[in-house]
Length: 293
Image (cartoon, rainbow, N blue to C red; front, side, top):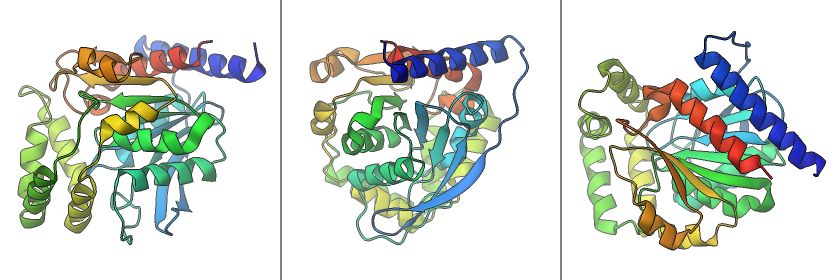
């Protein structure tokens, strides 16, 4: 066994221990979360949070209209045992938006820029919603630095192409009435009996995204062929999904025979907000599986 493999397994074991200990009422170690910045390839400022040391580093990428704050629970939970990174994609949170070319490959390059700024040699990439295809693009750029790609309520159907008319209509809705379109969208991302405080919190977190950035993001998805990018991946592909939007595992395995999905019952689009303890346990189990040799 190589030293690097042993180190990865040790980190995975420690992650699993700390999550299970927390679930059983164990003491939590204090974790310092640091705000940092770097530059994207086109010069846009990228703002990200980082906690802990050790590899593999866990990199968390939010979905459309969200921000890195959606992953605060993972920074605190896992930062005691390894490096954890959560970034704001351009146009979201605190990151800049002065760019002319928006698209999922560009977002993937932004993730790569943050990984390189942190000098992380081995990473496991987690992406929620839109962050799913973003981390696929990042993994393609990172090469053997990436140990795995883990979607979070995404990749329900791998072989899909984003229709131009669909994104155009969505972009127009958010441009015309951002608050109303956001409220309508968020209401569809949770089960009807979800905790109203969690739903309101998600909407509040997303309300700060500039409408112009939202429009650019939606239009930048036009024509994206997810299946083509996924087929080029050379690392394992996993998901931790809710059941609000069914995952077609059988169809996905025609694209990626190694596809595996952990499905959380009665769960919406943001498991890290709805049931963070259960979600963290599944994250730890996934890290352990991806680093097991």
